[in-house]
View 1 (tube, helix red, strand yellow):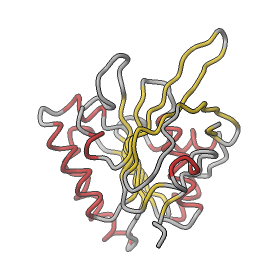
View 2 (view 1 turned 90 degrees about the vertical axis):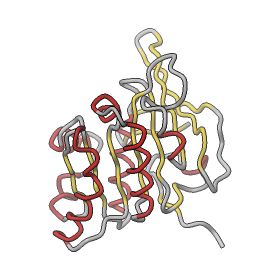
View 3 (view 1 turned 180 degrees about the vertical axis):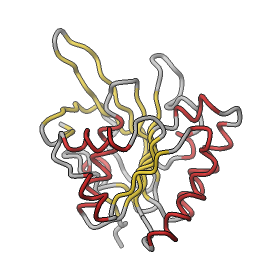
View 4 (view 1 turned 90 degrees about the horizontal axis):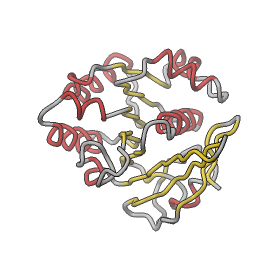
Length: 220
């Protein structure tokens, strides 16, 4: 019996992760500033909504309006998705991170819809605003999986830093890890994507070239 998966909406990514993210899995997308973590998260969440899912985008840094405008640049009508009730932007302060799951339960009761897709962008600000970061993030990701969510968590990764996240725990709790990198080459930028792991999946761990076009990211 094949494993149910959610397609990422990123051309070329699904084939190297077995066809998509396994249902009920949380994937960490990490990389230095400017590598496109938020763009990839937006591409994933809007593609999932187009496929008939209901999603929540929890943002700790950029506001909902800025995110919707960014999505519009690539033809993803997040504004319409929000009006339809299929996509909810939940803007929270990092110091309220421990209330995320409580707000999600409240949201489900208010709307009458239970979202099955989630993005948390970015937990880096959480790591900078809490002393018990590891315990909070571990508990939150575990709880989201128990609630049946499939999704992406983004984190900043400093140059030369050990591990795959700013907090140092996300990569162990998450089912999957995707690393984005970007290097300046003359007037251009060389972007790459590497899948470090994805549980219950045979993945291609090579370093892949990543391009940004009119429709978002493509993995070559």
